[in-house]
Image 1 (tube, one colour):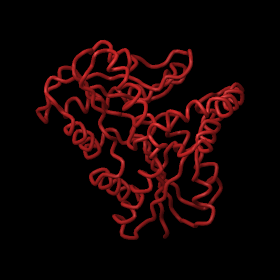
Image 2 (cartoon, one colour):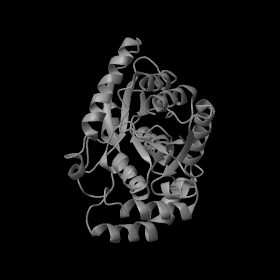
Image 3 (cartoon, helix red, strand yellow):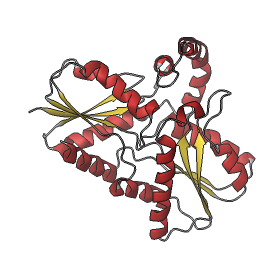
Image 4 (cartoon, rainbow, N blue to C red):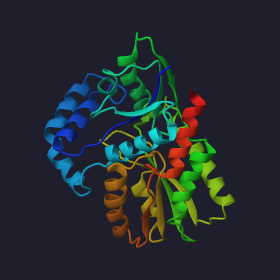
Length: 301
């Protein structure tokens, strides 16, 4: 029996053409905008916003999400020792599920989104994309829906925070926000809160003493109401004390960590008088994360 695991993520732009593709596909996604307005928004964002948004990407040399994911895929293929193939597919940029599977045959596939928490806008959207190709095919399909409660995974987060730790600092878990219209029917907000509580207990057990541990949200877009408090509001309350940021809703660094957290909000923190501002790296392809994924995959087949 030939098996494969497919790592699923949103995708990232390495040039303006990919950014245009990303914006077009994201805003056409009914899990993001479930109304006919998505066709106008998709057209507007991809046609008129791409040049302006690309300037932000230029500051980080384009998104590194595909590079990190390819490195992680290579590590998992080494760890699998031929028991299964590891592939990756992106939701809004190439390669998508159809492109990676159309010339391959597998008897069993494990879909493994790189999102620790379940949300209709991420996990379920990625499953939609995979299901469009896999529906009706004689392939056994398994799915990982969430993994934020896994102890080995959470230890990778603690290890990352430790690298930036200084006593007396504030720790902010920064999560991608959601519009309240989506969040009210989505498990994501409660899972984010529960995850913050789990990590806070683990940090206490490790003897790490923060002046405060906070949950905040980033990446709000447009005039509608989103999950709060925003990261900017939280930074303003903490100012001018030291801050450490951990991107709790990401496992692979991307424009929202490399640009938004490490550049955009760093500048805001400076404006608030915060002189010590650190951003922890996501797991990317580090050893312990690869070991966690490998164990999770083997336990799922």
